[in-house]
View (cartoon, rainbow, N blue to C red):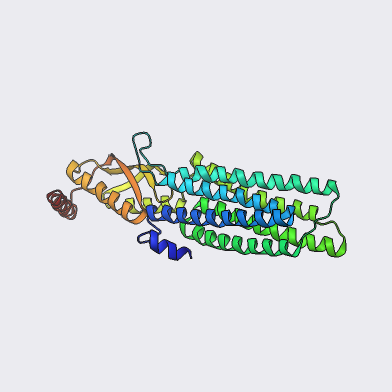
Length: 331
């Protein structure tokens, strides 16, 4: 179903490495999640009130909170799509992580409420009772949530989006919580053993932990955690591939949303190269890093040594001058 809608509304939807396509896919998955949750809310509330089932009514309102999570994911993807402006010269890509932080708080709150409700249920000493239609409705809800979970897990692996991870974790929590309630109710009704409250406490921990992990991950990203060391190493390797650069330092790379990297570095270059040639050298390095890594790198030249002008070196410099002139003529 998702691929069908993606092919209809998103051009080149399979090219998810493009930041714009990536955010469009996140938005579409959020819309699908919102529609499914709203359908579940309406259906559960109608059945719940008609059968006077508190379990289905409560689960219906739980799906309403799930809709809020999906709406937040949609807002996050929309904010991240906004282009750079005067106030945000590096774009709005970190809006995705900001919304992910809020989603994590919602997930943790749900886990906390499940914990409190389980304690109250144990203290009230009442027994969970389900009608057959209540079981059927909850099983249908689990199947719908399984689809949402699988969809967002697949997108999370492809797109590396904390928003999809948040929706995935929320769907998984719902599957565990609803299945746990059904199992506990069957055990209680069959053996008159009070396990619903204990199951609720266990599920509360399962719900709370992914939210806590997502909170830490999103907060670290917003504070400005270090990018993948492999990226730094690849940048350094490309810089040192050039024979006229003997070293580099002060490499700083910042991520402003997935697929948007900016950085700066100081390179140690020969002082007796003409500015024309030196500019061509660093420009070629910048282009290669942009093409292979997607990093916009600002390079500052530090003249730290002098070249010995052998015939081979002079020939190489002349080649660079010719290439630079051709580039300017094409420009």
